[in-house]
Image (tube, rainbow, N blue to C red; front, side, top):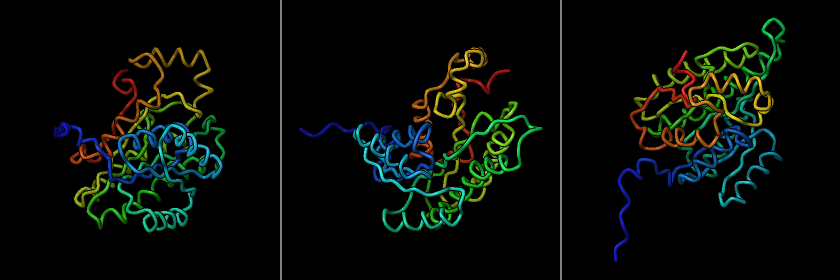
Length: 262
């Protein structure tokens, strides 16, 4: 008996044969996205600055039946990024999908924010994304194909006290995403962003445990709760897959409705 044919819609979200690099994927959102892309069929390269933490993430994925490749490099160092992309494309093959996720958060009142803290956050959240997008684009544009996904935020749209550099970096990513779309869409390279709302991760654990903040959040978000990192996978797979081939320069908010209401 012939095997049953898969519905055509399955192929719209099939990443088999594709190689994806997810930066900052040792934990949190990046780890969840790496896992989700691998489950959709992609060969996934996970990245972080700390080799030990990266190996721990690799083992955790391996224990759940997911094979990944590790590459430790610092996204804030443009030469390291360029060298890493050159090595990966030589030894592994073309990178078809880039998820530019690496980011940090630092909090302080704006009047007390040290210059070095401002520069640290912008250096990772904006410069680091730019270096990776540029390295990927230099290779994708000549090939005439590629998917780049920047991890933005509700802070690409909304401001909050004490996070000036973070909000500034995520707002800038929104426009970087659109500008790269303006340059590269005609070359077959899709550049889009996923904009998470408030998710329970290692970086937000203090807020999750703050009853007053959690109560405010649950009242502010129409869905009435914190997000789960796994809920970002569908949007990311969509933007990485053939289903989004005519989606360009778009920010897909996955925020429980937070940016939709006053």
